[in-house]
Each structure stands twice: as structure tokens, then as C-alpha cells.
Length: 216
Image 1 (cartoon, rainbow, N blue to C red):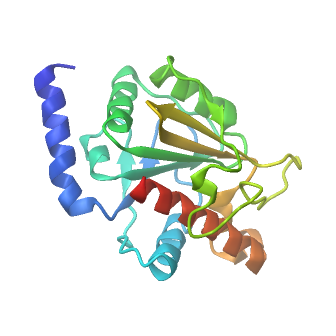
Image 2 (image 1 turned 60 degrees about the horizontal axis):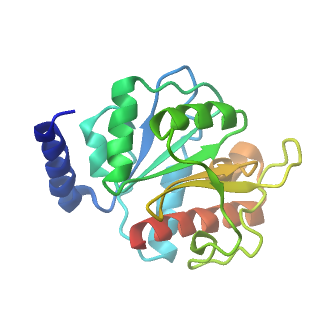
Image 3 (image 1 turned 135 degrees about the vertical axis):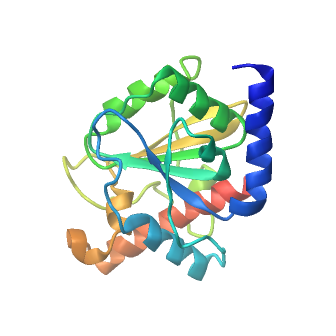
């Protein structure tokens, strides 16, 4: 990527920040995985954050492609699904530039995403290692406190939920929630038959992620 092209990207990011700094987006990727899963999750999370964190997030949740310049409009993008993820070389470079420029990616394993996600992200950052996030990390202690880390929303194989992250020069640039199903928990409770308590806990943890990203 030429220096001029990079400058253009950063200018778009800076200008669009004035327009979309209070927006989050759903990441649309190739490979066959259902990136569109959980259609009510992000709207519910935005509503919860606006009510309880007093944020002013836009209710409309756009889908943004990995290789699009529009990616730079959003401080936080969310990725979910059950299946394969494939980033082209240009998409990988674009997502890396976005994260290096200050963007943040939250990925939620909707069961079956783990291996595909790690493989795709290792293409982008072969020089970085994923780290398990300790329970003491601030992402678990924003408005809501989760002393044991991520809440367990759905059982699946009964494994403990885990949070994994990539850090770039000390800054968390991506958070991956595994064996947790936060996105399912954000959905309307009747979709998955979640209890009111599970729904609430998932939204509280989601709000912590939003607050951490917008204030770190």
C-alpha cells in the first residue's frame, strides 16, 4: 500500500470519526460462515448501552465488509458466526491497518468459530500471539464487575468461557469471547429461550466491552 493511499485511509478515518464515532458495525466476511447470525443482538446491545451507560450509540447497525474503506468509520466492529472465515490479502491488510489505526474488533464464537477465527487473524498478525485475558483485566471491570470473567450463557460442551486478546504495543486491539455465546444472550430472550438473568448478564458484559473500547 502506498504512502498516499495510507494517508487517504487515515483521512477518511479522521473525517468519518466526526460522523460515526457513536456507531458500531457488524463485520461481513467471506468464506461461507454465517456472519449475519444473531440479527437482534447488536440492536439490543445498543439499546442497553444507551439506557444504562448513557451512551448515544446509533440504533442502526450497518454491515461493513472487511476490505472496505467504510471500516474506518467505526471505532468498534463485531464479528460472529459458526463457520469458515477467509480474508483475502487485501482484506487482511485493510483490517490490520484499521486495528493499527485505533480500531477494535470484538469476535464472539457462536460455537464452531474458534479455529477459523484464529487462523484468519494469524494471517493478519503473524507476529502477535493471542493471550488469555486475566480476570483482573479492566474489560471485566467497567460499569459491571465480572470477578470470574465472561458469564456462561449457553453450555454447549460445558467448558468454561474464556476471553482471548491481541495486544499491539500494550493496547488491546481485539477481544475474542469463547464458550460463552454473548451474542446469543444479547438476542431477544425468546429466540434461544434464555432466562432474564442470562440475558441481563450477557448485555452487561457487552456493555463493558463497549465502555472499554470507547474509553481506553
